[in-house]
Image 1 (tube, rainbow, N blue to C red):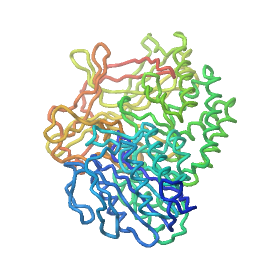
Image 2: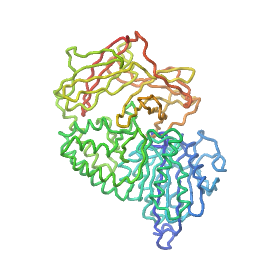
Image 3: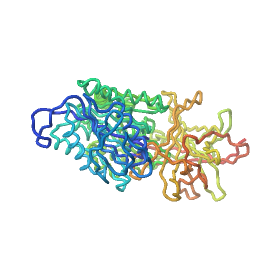
Image 4: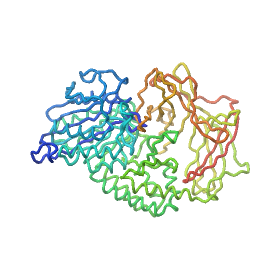
Length: 633
């Protein structure tokens, strides 16, 4: 993930304000000084591991720089230890500076010292001062850092990982605009992971005409800020012209960097979010009123729908699902809510006039929404998100329906020895049947494979989707090709756990690998990391590979790793009593020289003992498994 909430990795936020230029009052007195063209304000939370990426963004901006039709000002809060590079002629520093970004250079307007960029008052002060100092017809604010979808953005390492929640973002922006005498922004954008969510767009709707953000984790390079050249070239460039250029520039740069396979970026018309609010409320109410009957359909579609910020560890996964695709699939299978689903899809289409998506995000609607698959994974903080009240009500109804599934309609595999394991050219085939009475409620199935231990534990190497028969029989088939993933730094090699998912429509496959990153000299504290690999399953060609880090603030972004640090793959260990834990796959780890880490898929040797497990689960989280111990032929 690039700046996102990380888990985040690397992420950024952009806001543009529609200038209200009537009157001659002073800023803060209800009117802003009149100007022409665009002013872009950059709120760069570079006091994180994303600092090198955010400095590169400012270098890009300086290729355009302040000129006749464009003014660029920035508050840049730098970290200690991630980069010592100068920025546009200003030597390295720690803390925040208020800068004017020129063409190829920057002018220091004030040294602000140590600031908490997660404090909404700091954001408000920067907006008000930037607008007062740089009057224009239109305004942009760029907030750069990790993103986390509805939890917000940030992770200021110099301020105890302080973040800006959606409420704080709203209040900071609103207060800054009020002090500056502006009503709203022209454009709100998040150059950060995961911020193109319904929750975010609804909360920000009163503050801007447009919002630009990504549904998926962003690669570290983020946006291409040279796209702002269109504003410099034409003082009359409107927000849609600029927004389209930003989206296109991001996609073009991702293609150049080899990160385009799973990108997303949406331009959202916030003036149309009221219609989305209404449509989602009606859709949520319809689902809630029919929860007992419709929950199996919803659960199956949730399990299959395009999702973002995935991780094999459900405690790290973001549980964000594409809202438009989810509504579309539910509407197809549940005809009694199809009208409400269609109305929501139309509202989303109207509200997302322009977007891009890589092949791994084929069909992305432009807005995602929070939907953990089971109640135990639901964050208690979600209840406080004002824009999510209607959807939160549906989630409660859905989880209540799941907890009410009768015992005799919960999945249980047959205990008559009918499970069958056989080998063919595809590898290992595992066939079993569960009680057909539960067939309508089952939403997910998988095959897992690992090494049995002498103590009754199993160390699992991976999990892949299994197939449940569509005839209601309860038959399940899982296939494992007898290969396991390894990662090597050229000195040591380690097994790695993976989840593998195929998208038949997009004709791509995605592997997610859980890892831990230890900074140099650190042997206890680590960051959760996900390696995401997108590839063509026909040719085996790798389309994209990115390491995304999850920060202590709960935000995501592309991992900035010291090559002298250590990467440790994690394996899922299930003890004899069923207790699960993620354990290091190696005692020594691998050097975190990420570009030079090599991965491979090794075929298990003949005679290798193997435990395979088929699992099915219903929409209430009730599950059953059947296992078999075999020896690789």
